[in-house]
Image (tube, rainbow, N blue to C red; front, side, top):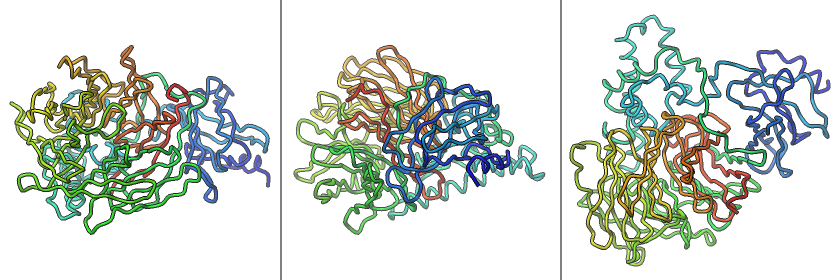
Length: 570
């Protein structure tokens, strides 16, 4: 039976988004509606066949006429199309080996499955409610993720959970389960379990259950009218390459070093760093030596290798990518408590940097302190961050960045909506700034070479720009989607823009300081939970990962290399 007759016989109900065409015969084609009109801006994903080499999947975008083309090196596989407001359907015709493929799509007002989790939160009218919901839940998973939406439907379909009180009790059971999972996850190395006010916890069961019951109303099986709210950054040359790492794993961050053909990804569930060959797709695990569970977490490119901050307290590690040898520095406790290293000091190029005395600085999330260590001597120390007036409870330092003069480290406290600076020469805390909302959630940040600090306001869905030389807030900008949960910023020194990783919207935002504009790059799948973005110093490609880190969290576990096709950074 030929391919055309097989396609005609497919039942219409099977012709949904994930229906795929055999792409082994062609790597070019067109995305069109049922009237034959080309659909621009569609994501077309080629998932390679199991026996093929290369990335697990490649995604390109259709142009103004709906045409798309994959690189000549693309492997054989299957094609699927993704576009807001449309569903893919079967085409009654197929192309031969030398003919382009046509992917047909039909309009569909219900965007469930194509719109991100953030689309379901647009009905929350109080900023404080949205900020609390995101700040509490989205540390580990998107809200509402597909299984959360299924749970809401189950409550709608069950007579015993129809009343507000019963529905709240049902959500309370979920919060308690989240706290159990969080405690189990973050005590794997023998340390204390997460408390209720921790960054990674389900929160207090009663209040959180009330918020969930009020915010996630109805069965959540439909969402309509969602738009990206910013111009599309992709063009016909944009290529997103995804590399799946076999489970079990908990991929956290990904980065390239001197060789753009190798991506390194951190697995916080173990002591492994994965080395991924971007051409062949081959993966090798490099294991940090020693008996302790470190859970590699933060990755920073250095001139002498890959620097690694652990998820669990007590160490810093460095990998020499050429010899694949390791060096570990144990960190002495801070006032009797283990050091919880989170972010390492880096410069405007996102490379590890030291102060003028050669000390590396870090944020100590476990002790709410700014810490340092000297790689030459192994000595370390820390300075507890002073209390912020009116912001008692939930103080946890998170992001950290070094100023261009290498005499100040800037830090933020995610739990209380605050940020400040520490002078590495005088060893004194200096500037302290609080956002109006304590739940705004400044998380990871970066600094430009002219001293502008860019903070991702996770709960508020905003970008803050602060001039560290003039000690003045430039502006706080609303992101196109306030429920997108921006996790991190990355200053791009070549394009001179800011990249913003989101964890609840399946997109990357770009902010251009010159005209204060935003652009958006959609990602090709649900649960595209991002925690950081790195930039390859040779190609300008964006390097990131789907960071669904807790073992129980569903979702893709992949490293990504994104060629924007702009040529600007090369």
